[in-house]
Length: 162
Image 1: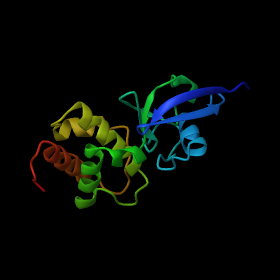
Image 2: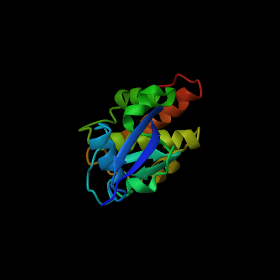
Image 3: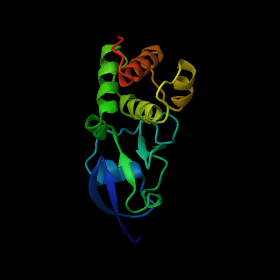
């Protein structure tokens, strides 16, 4: 199969990859670009572990063909979140609230959380649950995740509530 070359902005830095257009974005990120933080859970778009942000929108990297991602697209993976204030605040809130247990769902969960906070500065518990409906966590029962996101939203707004 013919290969294509794409130049993307990945986690704020220019990256280039050559691949068969039908390869999954997940595989290109992990295998070609070395970004192992994005996980494959189910490989069928049911668990959300592979969530990344493409041009500001959360997507399931296991379902997206890399060829669908246009040249110069901006992609954010879990590794890129530490470069942002929101990402650092979220990571700290997840730790403090005990929202990260086994850690398998956390890359996709925290990327989804980041996307939510970028679009809604003060999400309520209902919106948080709705926006994370595609992310499955088998350890936390979700309550600690909701608390962590609410804490991060408060901190972003300048409050220091726990």
